[in-house]
Length: 236
Image 1 (cartoon, rainbow, N blue to C red):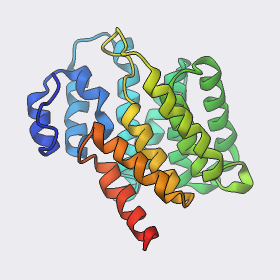
Image 2 (image 1 turned 180 degrees about the horizontal axis):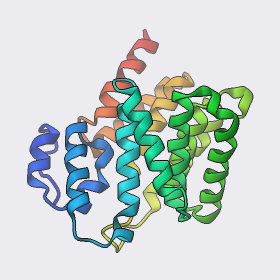
Image 3 (image 1 turned 135 degrees about the vertical axis):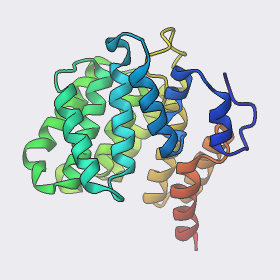
């Protein structure tokens, strides 16, 4: 059920939205305590394990990325545990998340880049080859490349076209018929594109992109806390 009071705090909307797959589709826009609550609900849900596998992986990625600064040890342990559990996954959506988790491990342990960086890019490249129309694969690859040093083939200039492509793919993507299938990406790709545009000093474009994201999700936490303050700072 869609929350009709989009301007209210997310916790109030969460209370009205009791459909677990619908909550999973907007996972990255929910406060961390709600993400943890959804993780517990998913663990108890009677759906088959293969149906829940992607969502469990996505939950681990969201929690590990959010807690990487406040609880680096816990975040690192979650990343390592998740990589071990899902290392044999070969569907493209899961491969992209595994590549993103490897990126988090590299951030926590830079020396691991020697072995993990090629492995992560291999995951992203294979995922994109299998699912070229997936906005999530394009977006996660773009985020990874944005945080990769330029000497290693990354940087914001490399990531921007991928983020633009993710936005386009998300706008074209039809809603999945399987309620457990990955369904996030439209608002997230707009938020990250706006962030990358600020980093690239494309401030006018960033403002327009941020407005597009906020039109779909007023009060979006990533845009309001990460994009707009950085945009204001650079505009001064």
